[in-house]
Length: 307
Ligand code: COA
Ligand code: ZN
Image 1: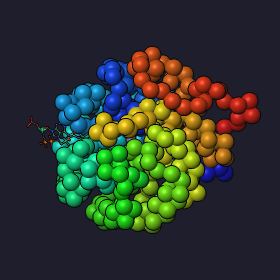
Image 2: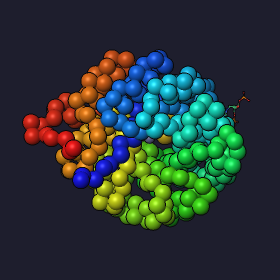
Image 3: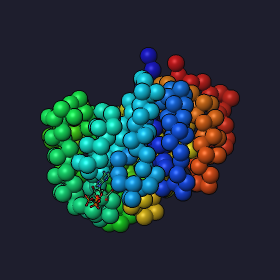
Image 4: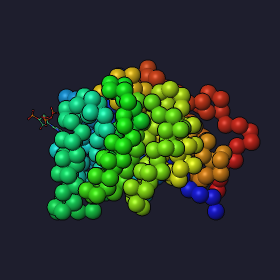
């Protein structure tokens, strides 16, 4: 039996938070349904941020009404604060991803709080599990800027471990180690991930890489070596944080699936179906920075998906 690797599609969230065009709610849901039909089993579907801050997600509640159409998919929502988590739960999400920046400068830019204040907010979100509304909530914590920051520069790995320990002890169910601005390299991944996996103590560890400087898939390979079996990715390599200068797209889902399957890992993903969807997505979104190699080069004749 081939080992399975989870691809968590973050296109409908990370992928379009900086997009120039507002993507109509129906299209967002079609995107998600077709991802599911292409074999994607986990999707970060929207973000519960104030519409003033990111207008693209003004329809988060309407998007949530499409959840019943996504049976069999783990659909999650990003939240920047307690209010976002309460909105996400009220809208019907059970999986909530809270972003917490290790870099003080990025934390202030992104959520107008220091990292310690953001940790205090995390505690308030984790406490929702004890309430009626939050029963059964699965709380992921995104450790943003874990590999460096365009605002602050160096980010101390010891601080990453400290925050990871703190949120693991405080009720995080999953740790999402994020290279928000594409500063990471495989040697850093090799150094950072084993201690995080140890701290996670059985909780799932997900890597979230941006390909800003071309090292996205190299970092995936290093994380696989470290034992990570879940990755965030975005169709066509869309993505980027509006509050981190110079941020560009996530690793492309189709290229990541190609690499994983070629290495003998099963992803369950139908790459041709993703490429069809990508063509439509490009027409819906118009001018954006689309990346990824497989959409241009095609799959090799020798390609055989793992069964
Ligand atoms: N959803 C909707 N409205 C929200 C909200 C949320 N999650 N959080 C706060 N608000 C509202 C408040 O109710 C308040 O409304 P009012 O002015 O009508 O009273 C207003 O927004 C300001 O609230 P406040 O708590 O003071 O927030 P802030 O101005 O300090 O901003 C964040 C903090 C976290 C809301 C904002 O910085 C943010 O949305 N950041 C996320 C950025 C992002 O999406 N980054 C990319 C993903 S990592
Ligand atoms: Zn990201």
